[in-house]
Image (tube, rainbow, N blue to C red):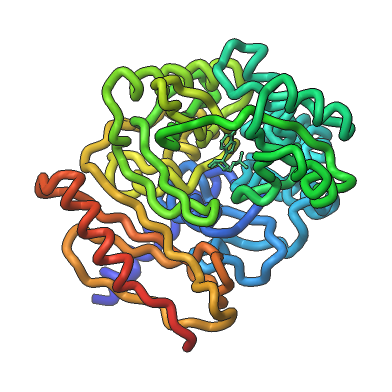
Length: 401
Ligand code: AMP
């Protein structure tokens, strides 16, 4: 027995040491649930990634609970970003609010993907829309707004309703105001006082969809099939994979996503959110330069999850298969509106149902604290799957501990 231990232990040690020497150190700006699932994917790729370090302001962030080291600092803290670059071989992000100027200045010393230049384009909705339009990628009509007069004249041009949007820093629909009548203009401008603005024609869409697309450092591009996104209070409620559209629309959306990846620089996974209009056109609403909530289904529905795909893309490995093997519905678990604080994590023990909690200690109203994937392995069909997710979602109760 002793002989066995002595002969096996050094071998394991040598293998671990080899992995450590060969693998790269990955830095992630942001250590929330996306950083956590990226870290979990990295943990299965030890020969390529020996260690993960995340930069996140919340102590014991979700990624740190699955083995990532953590630098506790604000996402925009220049000296913390520099420290991360010093410690890592590659930097990526799980949020789009990192400081693109600081990242640009670090490109010579550290590989950064997606490129800070792409991040900069995406961070400003107006610049992003101009970039897409310039590359003949379909978007809703839009204009920059710098004054009340300009807003009135553009509304005259577009007709009502329009969506007034803040150009930077908004998420979950927070920076949007739908103007349906001229007398709402003063209120809209008051709410966004001091912020850079744009307007968009209001799109009458019949469905919100997205494509998870990836490009590797070698230039290889792959897209996952089109999925359908349902929102509640402007927050993603569930993703239906595949989208319930006809083939022509899905193919068109995937083609648009592919073209977008060709024109954007840098490698990684991108979440490309789109509208399907009443007359079956596909328009891009916005791009996330990172793994995306609407791609969580890939953890069970596909051979390669979006998290592994992102790592494969930034490491320059061959991209994984993106085929959807099982139709799947992803349902987001949000903190209830009526309390903030510690909660009892739910548990689910059902066939083909995969619960993922993010290890967040506190529930806050509308905060994403987990998700469930309901996977159709036995050919139930989407209608039945929707019925089941309805029953399941009503049974998940987040209650104080
Ligand atoms: P965004 O802030 O661009 O991410 O948009 C948040 C949500 O607002 C989207 O998911 C849509 O439901 C809605 N939205 C955004 N832009 C438009 C638009 N031009 N027309 C209609 N709805 C929109």
